[in-house]
Length: 245
Length: 245
DNA sequence: TAGGCGAACTTGTACAAACAAGCCAGACCA
DNA sequence: TGGTCTGGCTTGTTTGTACAAGTTCGCCTA
Image (cartoon, helix red, strand yellow):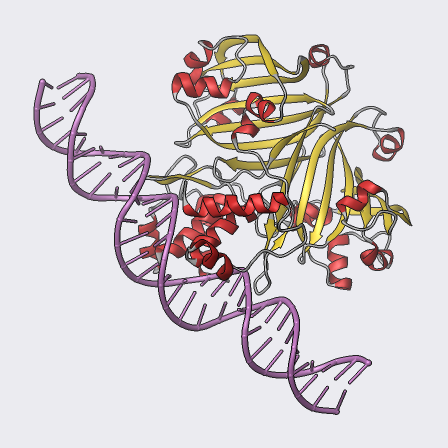
């Protein structure tokens, strides 16, 4: 582990433990540099990490402030339902409803950056949390990864992890669009809610390490089962509002 | 403007213009350093900015990849409905439905870090986009900012901007929780939708530059009017999934 | 032709130094 | 007492250097 990651981890633990209370001040960079026998640059990398997590804020001239103490989870947990569920202490399960190859639609071609009409794999899954159905997932995979996806167990718990182990595929970048929609007849039956009741929708496109689009997905969560959380600041502002379609 | 911000802006423009196509490679750090007559450290700060915006991705040993070309808006646009609307070319309006002081509930006391029972200001607003009602906003302000809020015009377009101009208040940090809920009778009437129809809910707590909580709010958007967008990566992962209440 | 190997390239990490810019508190003055 | 002002503290920006670690691609060999 890198030196600055170690320092960041140490500070994060101290914040979570309450050594540096919310609203309080962090030690100065010079102070931390001395304490860890590191250069100021390395310390700055460490606190930049905490700032990106939204744990601390800073202004030129003033000492850094502790903003929160909740640790945000890893990238994987946003993309992998199963791995997120496990880290939260839930038991995740799921099953494939349908899986078929078909030529891709123009809108999908753009998102997966393939030629329109090129063959893609369309998979529908129902996901459960502690046995309760909470998520209907419709994923379109690019043709080149389709064989690996078709080889997966239909009851496979974590698609992300299986694809890593079987094909060496690592999800590295994602784009997400979050809004609310009414449940259609099909979604409603699967999730056990009334037709027209609210669902939280996450549309995402995922990209491999090489910047190659792998999948785009339309996930619909039963209301109340899942929420998305974010911390932002004038410095780091990843989440933006968008007009509806 | 800082040198690295200038370089980042230049590269961002080039990406948006298509000089560096999506999926393509950025020039190497050494190359950029030479081109801009800056040190490699400065160039690294510039590309780190673009990476934080989700525009480029990087792996050790390989050249940086262009992931997207959409420019993400400023922090303010996530907190200020009016300023976001204006930047998107919409005309925002709004009106105060009610405004009253009351002792705060225990849950609010925690979020605003004040004593339970301390007086807060509870404001309900209806917001419109091009005349169409799209958002019901219920905001609880901390006692110390209440007088400035009460002095605002009820038809005030941008609360954020007015509070900056009248009280010098700058929103600097925010925490957001996004999920879907069904419209209650009141929300439904105000937004012109049927009771029980889906709404996108954004609960947020905003903090001043000093790390002092200013307001917490429960905003409900009519489905289809607004979506939230985010780009993330293994390196920068601000958005996390959370279990429902 | 297919595979392995290695050299050149590229990004990641770490240190040191210097100055700029903004904040804060204590000292000072009216 | 109240306001101002200054000096020290703290973060922001920039440059330079060095080595580590991973990728890429051409070359060579079997």
